[in-house]
Image (cartoon, rainbow, N blue to C red):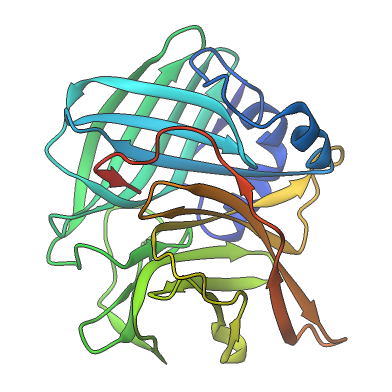
Length: 296
């Protein structure tokens, strides 16, 4: 039995490395329309686990878990919810064979940030959804993300702001300015790693950018595509055989057209780990219905 609770920041990175073989195992309820055998073999050396919350037109919640570009878990709630997610991230997990319970932080279009408990069993497509508490109100209804420890969002003036979640997971700190401005942003995601925090965002022209806070460096990862993104979500990655963390992040992006892709954000650093440049690997299509009203 594996039971882990109240996991934040780097502690979450270590936990995900330990649980990777369990999280990446296809379960009942997973969509068969994942990667082809060829693309699966091509991605066999590493695994990037991404959980996406979807609210359907009927108001039900769908949890879709991706291993790189392949759907390995898909569960749907029986009841509708009133809130529409714009971003979600795991903050606590309990799992043992046949059962999993996740506590996730969810930012929604109503400006509220919630802790939501998701519970499901293997062999069933059902998802239990329970709001545990509301952490705050008055947040933006878009362009907000969570890196495992801290909320980040873009203010009306383009300034990045942040608010940290306490270890008890019941309070957010007073908002503060990050000291960086971004413009023409359509999607935002952050990732806490063992090598520092990374903030990714997509511009209106479809290009993707990276900001490294502790180095005050901003990098352009991809050229404009002309296709704005409605969702950009980063994920922890590890080697599939050793479950050791690797120095890149996974990125799942969804265009407004509904086309979803998976890529890796790769960094080049010097001997002192200063990021010199960054790039994205070639996109691989993520199959499935990504035209739902709300994704987070």
